Length: 302
Image: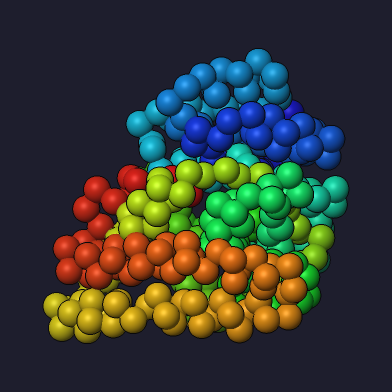
């Protein structure tokens, strides 16, 4: 491995099952001496040991005390050595051009962050629960995506200029939240970029019950962190708005998926589950505005 890699790829891993080996096998086919791949694993099983055995070129960090994806990502980004840092999850299967494009785009373009579409893998397309969890998290990134400037990027398919990210000490302490990092970049006048060559598929099976609970924790973490410096007046105002969020989110998804036939049809089928997920998130937001993130910060598992 090069002492001065051009691209670091950080993979957060939390009980991913065998899909992580497919993820790394695809990356191995695109790897060179200038690419470093960091796997930060918080799994309760022996995933880290098995990754070390099968992929000895990977830098593996076993972090069993870090039981949330934001914390795992923060540890990985802090350890990354390259001027360009890509962020994936263990269930992500990158396109054949992903690594080349990740390097190219940050040498050719000024934007500090770039990403692309997220597609549900073909093996998952007969599963109602897979579609429901996919559409909840990634409805904005269903292909095809428009090339060029964009307002939002997927948190598990994104490449940053390292200089645009927080310092290592902050990342290790607080973890990494894409929503806040990108909001900060936009507040500083930067643009975000979407590229069709930075596309991934996800092969993810999450039990509906655990996903429903995780939406509450994610919503509470988001609201608690977002409002940490707010006055009580502002917190109460946003808490009062939170009960209306499920219908607002559903309406946005209807508009966003209107021209994407397959995803639109599955949205209709999955709508009861999606509404339940949104209600859980809104309950978490309401609690977060009033009581802060609490222990929910370390329960963000997806």
